[in-house]
Amino acid sequence: LTLAAPFDGTVAKLYVRAKEWVVPGQPVALLADLSRLRVETTDLSEIDVAQVDVGDTVTVTFDALPEVTVQGVVNFIAPKAAEGSGVNYPVIVELKEIPEKLRWGMTAFVDIQISR
Image (cartoon, rainbow, N blue to C red; front, side):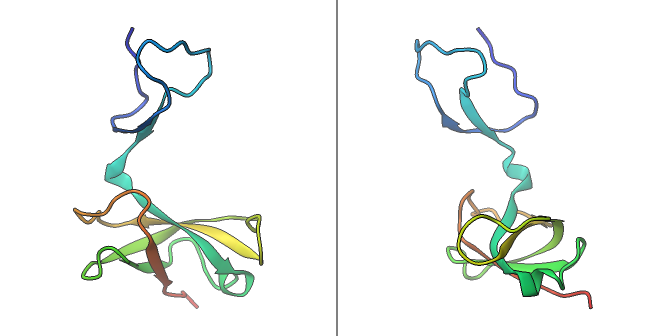
């Protein structure tokens, strides 16, 4: 039996083991396109989000890669605050380049250049 993926990618996680039964609709693997990593903020306050627009330029740095700075662009701003404490909005940033040693899940710091 062969599984066909809807895009080229890397298997990031397997949810089943060899010879294990699965049911229709059950996830088998988590497939990632690591050539298009993005950053999702989780702490943009309601005061700050009101000043951010899709297309704004972003500078991104990483805890694990202190010598690396990457440019990006705001691609999506959530229309609703995230669940949890405080009023914070998720914002997705597309990176213009992917540093060689960047890994999925690394902590990133986002500095958004406000367009106003």
